[in-house]
Image 1 (cartoon, rainbow, N blue to C red):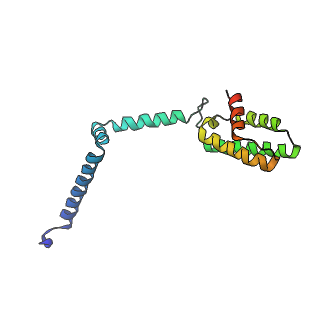
Image 2 (image 1 turned 180 degrees about the horizontal axis):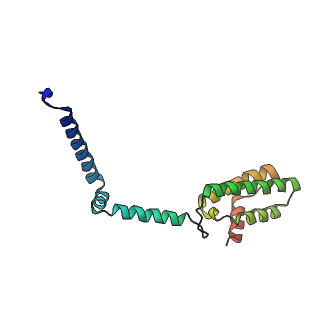
Image 3 (image 1 turned 45 degrees about the horizontal axis):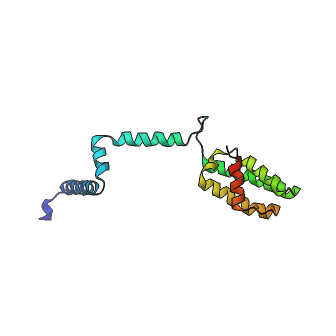
Length: 148
């Protein structure tokens, strides 16, 4: 009996069965997306999302931002400030002002995740390089007072 079925018939039946299976899963678990796909709105939705993401990642000068690169540049700048302050034995207040002035130029640091990373970097490295200890609330208050 199986000798009567050709490979062509087998693969066509298999393709129809797999397509029916995935359409059933799509309709059962993702009905809204399936309706959008049938109506052709899926392209419009994805284009709108893409445009929104592009607008979110652009600066006022039109160049795309990369927050990780900005964070790396900020950490390098802060490391330099902390190194100089450790060599010159800068006072705590002067160092805090230098750090806040350096941080005010970086727009990506307004996001909470980056802000926490920078604060943790300052807390750890100020103690090591300058023997000056800051509290997290002290840095947050100073940052808030000097933020635009």
